[in-house]
Length: 91
Image (cartoon, rainbow, N blue to C red; front, side, top):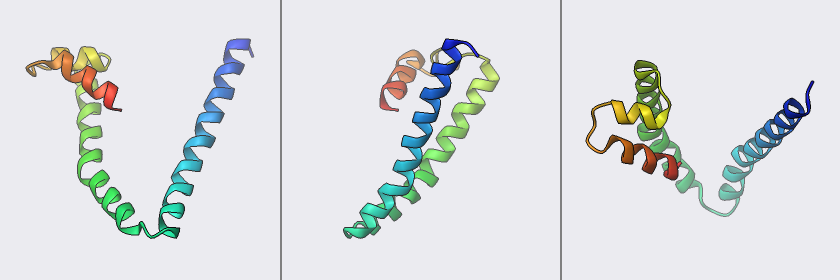
């Protein structure tokens, strides 16, 4: 294994550990301090808006066979390049 591969593996493992910590700890802490309604609202919004948006982005990427900026640019949407930059910064 090369040095670059080792660094990549370590950074990936750190990212997974931090992400899983946030996924499990955040709802628990919010629930402990009376924010259960917020977590429920967050899950509902994520399912109603986030999942369809993610699916649309995957479909757009598969159809155009380009990266995020190129996909939105060639999609025919008005201001497609700027829309992709705004989405990238938001995420």
